[in-house]
Length: 466
Ligand SMILES: *[C@@H]1O[C@H](CO)[C@@H](O)[C@H](O)[C@H]1NC(C)=O
Ligand SMILES: *[C@@H]1O[C@H](CO)[C@@H](O)[C@H](O)[C@H]1NC(C)=O
Image: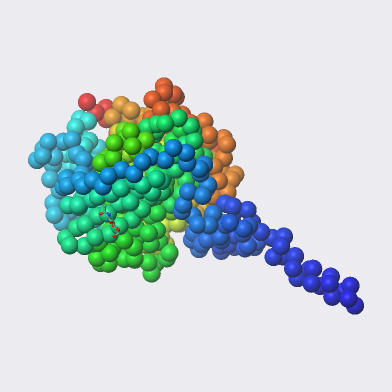
């Protein structure tokens, strides 16, 4: 009897003991029949209806990066009082104007990067800068919400490994921090990665990692999180910016403060700034890289639909029976996008852009899109089609190899496969370390382009911009 009871106790105890999923593994979601517990130090986190994952607890913070030596001395507080963001090199007034209320027309193709909204063709590199501004305006207006310009007062201090950023605008103030992890070698200044919510790609040697707490700036718990976070304390809970736009704004303020600190003190080389993040934070990394021209290299990891995917292609995937995040699903799931997007989510063909043109805001700066062919809800066909098409813009600008796509399956979401290490190294070494590497990387391990047929989606030709 005693034996039988202890046997029952053992059997009852077993599932909890044995069935603990390791970090990055799936732990829930529609159709998931495996274990739902995560190993110590990780938390089962719902990423969407289809996928919950064991993520490090907390997802932010410098716990997984090497300890710091030689912390910089505390820098004096400094104020910057510029009012313009360095977004444009085009002469004022030289760009075609966009109507205040553009008339939108349905287009089942991926919209032409090289034709202005009003119909004029983009023929020069200088005109690309105009087109980039136009696309930024359209993306803010119909999808991402308004990105506020640099506020009147941005101040900050670097104390040890904590960067404090204080911002005041129109009589309101917020303060937030970013944690900085230095390499354990040499003195710098080093290239730096801004890690949205934490670094999930393997950390390159001799780089600083600045962990940006995006959840603190704009919450992303679920669809009820809208208006929560420091951005909305400053600009009001009704501000149109979706969470990703709020994060991009906050990342720009981090760069503002770093610009006030001598590189001999910060040990950061601001000409060599990168941004990265995975999954939802990868979507955020893409938006930050798109909006912030002071970022040299943008590396979104597994951002999938809503990041590297195109809405039109994700809708086509769902229509053919693949459970992919689409615009109509994503706006119910979370608050990454502006409420400005809601009228479009069931008619994405009316958008005068798609996400090949969100990615194109990064051009001619460097972009490496790392994604996963093995997870349906990430929209592998959509990502491949969208990003291989986005490369058209870099090609037209004569720098096709400044934009890469590396899409590999057979691994957990956000677990970086070693087969992509060479692609990451090539981009980091060229754009952050000044080396001459081959970054001609547009690749997927999905058979037959995962079903993407370019001629069904692209009806423009790619010019050579002069
Ligand atoms: C591409 O297709 C769209 C939608 O049918 C159309 O409006 C546009 O004029 C076409 N572009 C070209 C270059 O054929
Ligand atoms: C930044 O804000 C914090 C919190 O309000 C405050 O304690 C600190 O003195 C401020 N620092 C600067 C440099 O304004």
